[in-house]
Length: 563
Ligand code: NOJ
Image (cartoon, rainbow, N blue to C red; front, side, top):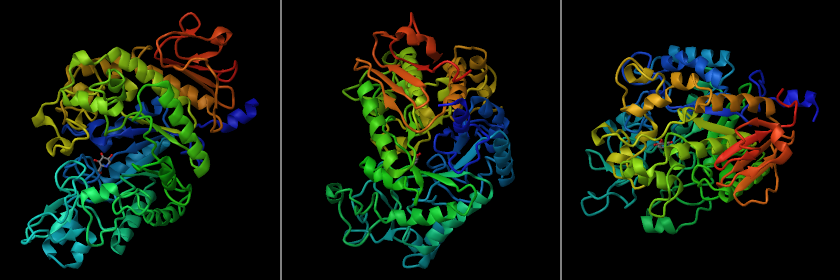
């Protein structure tokens, strides 16, 4: 490849094409825990503006904001009371506009979260449905049913909600409504034309304000076949996930996304969307990534994998093959606001036979015993996995705090916890997801480690000081310095969306080459992996005597590529 072609393929901030998202680095902000400008303990939109330079310096292409809409915070904001406003505790629409301008000025695009499966019970539609009573048109926008049993005082089915307990909640007049998550999150009825219309309005509302893309919450759950008789849980579990399952990943959900795509394409450049779709196979996931639909779908396969060469190789190969079929680009994620941070997951030995995310959950559930966690090893492996990810074709999603190497916070007292899955006894996430949502440490000293002037809404442990931004900015060997350097080099090295595996003769060492000669070598084992003369091509990472040490990744590039 000549220097001229290389320049053209560089994914720099001036690249304003419709395809900006294909190999973008998207940084997830959990707004209530990012930066608190008004000192009330909750992060806010002006807080994000105040850190715009930090984001620019990190070298990301876009931010994705988890919900910042008015909400009673029954599920950290995923219970939206008004889809077209800002939570007054987080700011105003004017603040939002200012944030978009500040980020755009710095070449950072903005992706917002759309939560269409359910609203908050405080949404005006739900309040209207409660007041209007059974049989009313207002109840049609949600999923109300009569109860079972002679007096209708049993839930219509035995279905359980994702956060634990029944998926049905009874209202005063005796009817029940469906909530796939917390009771404060009633499921919307996507057969209702007003529901469909209203979301189109929401998409236009934010697109008109300059938002570049959308992350779609539980994109696979919107449409449902609720014809009577409703199946039991045992019957549901026995049904195939072939597009006709009554509750999940139905083929007809794509009619909605085709309509959304038409709206996205009204804009220049077209708005992008990424589906959060937990579906049974990569083939089913591909439907969400179709160019006639949302265009891209999260691939959580590495997030649930172990730090293991074979698992990584299989996941990478399968997802790149899927991307070739759909024409979309794949997404890579190791951490987000729903899972134990990967620096912690990788520092745990298998617990009770559980590995990956489940082992992290189990550790949190046991109160995070310090003697079970190898922090240093976890962080080393996290660096190795992240550098591998950043070398892959496709887009990578980073979660706030991972650039500091933050570990999961297990030491949160029950009365300080907020996650509904903790209170409702859901099995899937132990003590819940609060441990990865603790407000960021910006400074080693001062109120709430520089997060804001007041106490942070979730308690920050003392050891957060070690990970503070000001500490890491002063240390060239910090995780922050590594992320900055990796993102800077990635920009220079970016090339076409493909890779070729290079044989290493070692089952625990992965090596691949990108079309321009950029190579990524990850040693998942403990024995050093010798590079011979190629050691001279090192551009990122550390070699010891010309070899890649265990639990680490290096990048190699032919002379001149990053000069
Ligand atoms: C997925 C989101 O990532 C999670 O945080 C939320 O609790 C559920 N969807 C329900 O909205």
